[in-house]
Length: 384
Image (tube, rainbow, N blue to C red; front, side, top):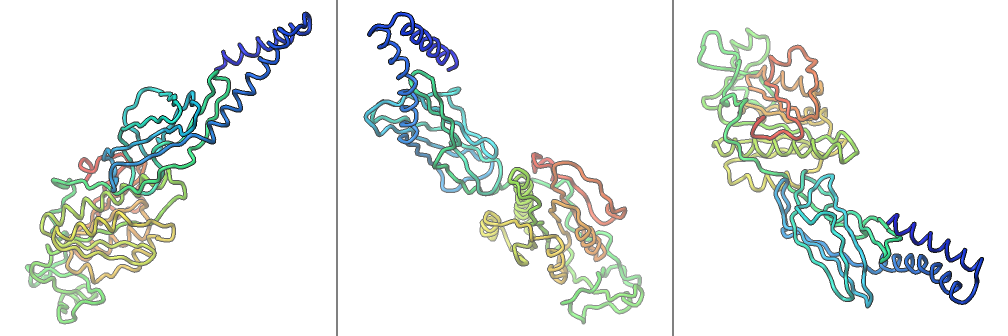
């Protein structure tokens, strides 16, 4: 393009010199021709800018993270003159477009169009723009170029990926760990009383010994359920920062729920979405509705961990043997709740989703929970 501009500029200078020193109809004709060329080229480029058409579509109703989906786009010329050179650039922050010819430039004859089929791969769960981001239009002589944002972008709603787990590296076998036992009846485990427990189940001897009400754990209760506590706070207003973390939080939550249900265990998922939310899952058949709920789940800056842990019903953990906590920040509320659960004989595993490792400031942390850091790009099967 620079070479063409220099060529036109040199010819224009020569035409000015010719009419200055020689004059005559030929030199003046050449001068006006060289003067009109850039003007016509600029007008043509602007005309194409207003008249081109782009159509985009995806080949599936539901787009899932890391799943290639058919993607089509059409460049259309609906006028009586040709479009000389049109290039397109794609969104690449949160999605990737499949292989196309390198740096393609499309020329469209009157009434003709170019349709391309490829695939789009979305990196994160959420709602964002995919497909053609920018359009570049050039004139025939390559004197002018307009690079601008596509007027009609394609917005996709991307569902989280379901990772089928074969096992858990932190699997505590879903049994009570460090549960206090009745000194006189070592086969009867107890836990601390929470509001909602039946008073008839209080073990008064152990309560007198510990100084706090202790409730007998019924036979089979220790392996009857698993709880998942999911952090729903949005910690940034920048999509580049919050999308990767939120995507991984939901991915872990969904994978854990499916794994436990597949093992025949009941699952309760506790989170906060503008208000306390609790999902009770029984059997693998209940997973589909839960997955849809997580696909539409909304994170928010007001969904703080303080609200989450203050609104969780403690009594709902009475039948749980294990609690998985999926968080993005190791808040004081998170650590205190883990300590409270562990004190009641519930094994706790904390999955800390973060870009870089953060220090564990609480000295009692390792005594109260198993800690696993999960990076944004880590593979779930390898870290869980």
